[in-house]
Image (cartoon, rainbow, N blue to C red):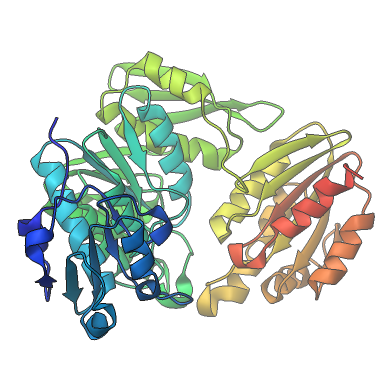
Length: 467
């Protein structure tokens, strides 16, 4: 098996690059931007971030064994004492993307790794985790670590794949126009999937049409690459866009799709039993994951896994290994109550989905929701927060406690309804209230955008049982 490496010819391809001491440059097997991750022979790229400048760590990286460093042209005179090859470029962040493009081309040239690109307004991280787990039953899989899905994370994800990986499952995120196109051109997906088009990052993408335009860049690059796209026919904007793509597979619960899902029932913990049909193939299983969103994410992942040749037994084995990532719909059972910790992020669709799931969980009749603001909604902030009111009523929420100016408008919209409402202006006051709230015989949901740090309130609730 031929190793994936960067050699002198590859590095001379870098735009604006000048290489000093090129005769000393040996093949590179690893590219890093963190000096702590340097191993002997690594290529270290010095990137200036918001808090730290990688140029401050170049000498440390060389001491640890970096075989070549990439720095800004403006910094060259600071590194006269460095005795390894130095590559100067105009912009080291762009150089990271350019090097990742070369690495991706080598993966493709050696016919080593198939690349799956995932994006969407919600669910992309969950689909990534589910898909990687299912594919691991047949292949050696590399995936995006944590939420490394931006203009730094995507190149690093590509660079983390090597000759040992059969499949790379990569998450692609955005909050500004053009970011998906940039990342997708580095990723060059063989397959791509958009989970849904929702009200996310509207501060910069304006509305759902803006979100659609940005997300479809992943499909466009996949199409140009001769790849196949997976289209969620339950999403009307995505279904409408499907005619643009000939090489495609559709999936959904409510539409005439290629991969058809049906929710047969939910158990007392809100975990769905699904039937999935694809041509003459049929599969029934109960997910170890709760809620309708989990069913949506699972069906999306299965659609890709089937295309990549996963068998029914491999699918069943992989499904048994699924688990909920930290802060994403973690259902924690305590004596007398259940905590649903879903603090990773929030947008209108995901909040409505988890409220629906809370309503379906049976053991305790008392339903409590502790909700923090949904962020990056732009001028639609008030309207979208107030739009949650019907879901609160429909799913039988008995008590609603909120924090954040957006959630204040939700409380105002529910004032004439028959439920207990209380809005808190400070984290301290909500924390104090939760330390004394009667938790018994209840199901308690905690949810909000990442910036609201709602996990603090989940910890208060769970911590009460340890005192």
